[in-house]
Amino acid sequence: MAGKEIEKLIKAVAKLPALGTRSARRIVLQLLKKRDEQLLPLIAALQDVAQNIKTCETCGNFDTQSPCSICSSASRDGKTLCVVQDVADLWAMERVGFYKGKYHVLGGVLSALEGITPEDLNMENLPARIKDEQIEEVILALPATVDGQITTHYLLSRLKDMPVKITTLAQGIPVGAELDYMDDGTIQLALNSRKPL
Amino acid sequence: MAGKEIEKLIKAVAKLPALGTRSARRIVLQLLKKRDEQLLPLIAALQDVAQNIKTCETCGNFDTQSPCSICSSASRDGKTLCVVQDVADLWAMERVGFYKGKYHVLGGVLSALEGITPEDLNMENLPARIKDEQIEEVILALPATVDGQITTHYLLSRLKDMPVKITTLAQGIPVGAELDYMDDGTIQLALNSRKPL
Image (tube, rainbow over all chains, first blue to last red; front, side, top):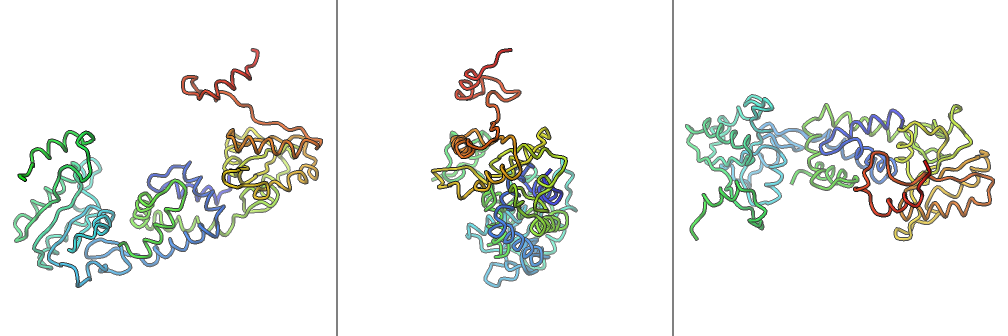
């Protein structure tokens, strides 16, 4: 009803995460109305990314170069490796700016439900990387979900015989949170792991 | 933190309606991961639309041709004109498939708050179009909002001396709705406009 070019674009937009046909239609309409201000710059930005961004062969990050700018940076601590689920988590860590080591992006976590095995993830080369780069500490910064914790334990068993310190992020009440809004599991865990002042 | 190409794309995506930086980041990450299945087809679909879709000079619809396929269709009733706010409303009417006349897309409604005057809308040529095309009925299908109703009354005053029948969409309880979930205004209006059975 809106012409096949427009319908095709609506379908392509509706496949993006968190968007459905209705929001895709609104987005496409706005793009059509703001051709010069939004549609053409968006096409240029997408093309730029499609042409220039590659996956880093060392850590799995996205960058214009491989090894990426983090992997090839001399100013970062090359002895500490932070294992994350996704590039989004790497970005979150970099936004904070506190961590100065390097990364290893798994590209997901193990999942019996979704049939994700170690072979599906960027995991096989991790022991070799730890050895080659003489890593001294591996921080397993995987999600605090069941699948994330299973992946943490799997990696722990894989790496336990290597001469490397393995740590994980602290769990507990987030900064600024009120107890009343916390789930029971978090409160119990925070109580169990309570610290002397 | 994610490279300037990626940051630029995230900014361009975040400007789209209903999207913020967070959802834009998720979308860009998915596009980067699904380069061949999603990123390249999306670029192609956007380019196709950017190159081929124009605004119909007669009614304001978006189509590959101007006049658009509705305006130039011989099988549609050329004596009835439905005035809508936006191309999205035209699409909604076409999805229903019940209306067989032609359209006139205003591109918005009058708004004192947003400073939208008749000159900002595709309104000036409406009287000439009604005369030239010998329109017999104008259906004002504008939104049931304050601004929409003001626009309806403005058009009514502009067209009242023309030999044309002017109608508007019926207002009342939507099909399938429960009274309990209706706002007070709608219930009052539906009561006032009650019909004998």
